[in-house]
Image 1 (tube, rainbow, N blue to C red):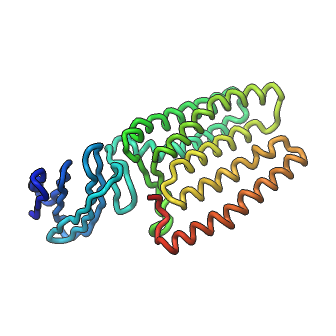
Image 2: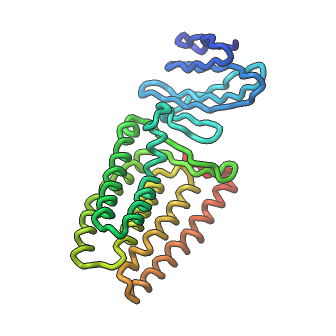
Length: 287
């Protein structure tokens, strides 16, 4: 076993067989261990309200290894080889699960709305239930974010270093709360308006609105530029049918201008900026 100390508050590693991992809440963090011939690594970052942050990078192979340390300031996160994860636990409704579910839940609702399109009462009931569940999911993350944590989840890695991932920080939390809260009164108003005016394509409207809410939450929770760009483009495309909902020549003309401006500028400026950032910094992660 390899162990060490830094100041009086540090303690040696406890013997745990083939793996040893010790994180003090004070002045030192030391790590050592071995798992046969398997090479593995993880980065830890920890903060409490009164203590420093300990960052440790470990890379252990056959025979063991020693963790390097540095101290700084940051919020509580756990970073793995495949991305960041919430370290609050692996339960079914853990922070990571909710962060990953919240942007995708309105997409599930959109499918259910489309399937129930021939039954207006069911369709509108699904719309309201989807809105309420999204608000509860987003609101459930607020206490952890207010306490300084950064719940995170990774869906998949598109290319090495390019991943679809979410991480919740205070400003994104505020944006997602506002968007998810407003979906409920907006849906109530839309149901009354659509029925009173006998609007055409009501199912399409509710489906596209649900996709737009998914996109808005995805933008709010984006952990990197790739995720932000993807959900921003989805937001633009999903709101096009809302802009042209009236179906008139004027509405369709306005929709074409809408798409031209948003997609044109996002490709000419945002995508270009992302590529430059990737070339210069070697990463698209928000820090």
